[in-house]
Image (cartoon, rainbow, N blue to C red):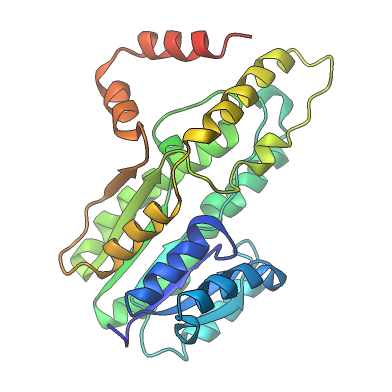
Amino acid sequence: MSKKTAVVTGSSSGFGLLSVIELALKGFTVIATMRDLNKAAALWEVAKAKHVEEKIHVYALEVTSSEAINQLKNLLTELPSVDVLVNNAGFALGGFSEELSIEDYRRQFETNFFGVIAVTQTVLPFMRSKGQGRIINISSISGQIGFPGLSAYVSSKHALEGYSESLRLELKPLGIDVTLVEPGSYQTNIWASVDQTEFKENSPYLSYMKSLLKEIETGKADHGNPVEVAKLVAQIASQPTSPNLRYPIGKGVKRYLFLKHFLRWEWIESAILKKLRP
């Protein structure tokens, strides 16, 4: 295991940072990438506390930059193997569809979807040459259930789910596994941009968005510890048997998915709208 290498995107905080640590604890050499190296201090602090800093190597990577992707390719050629890829880089854009621009949607997809494809296509030749590998895409419950005020984020995660399903079928015969981790609500900074969403006072969605933000704020006390997700990522990466396609995780997530698949949409719609009624 000590000779195996894992690449993690979005490693400066949240699931990415903790996944780097858990993978290192499992014996992986971890290539921890992040957009801004000035934010690496938090990762090093935890790594030193866990005594795994020697197993971690930090590099800058903006997943939406062609130049950065080419630099990643050059880096990977120097490694003995690339055994695991954790596509974690992403953010959540808040706002109602009518008031978001097409550029807003493009920006959301560039990171959450096209960035995943760019990194994956860079890594795949190295995995394919070895006839093995695991790709772990960090999705969300939002990849299976829509929520108001989050259409850009939800759409990007739905796209990631479809891409991952197809990719798994393409790569399985080559010895490469593709897995989706679908967290519910956890104590990470993914919702920072949603919390900071600004609305004009004359917006027709103002009261609706306030209700949504209040619901998010009220629920924060019940958000899970993100280390649970990181431990799951490390487990998937290191288990001897082929992992499943999907791993939903978090309080209430499996119940939500059950309701989505077995209840009539009208009932789900009524429950959500009633809860968020201004």
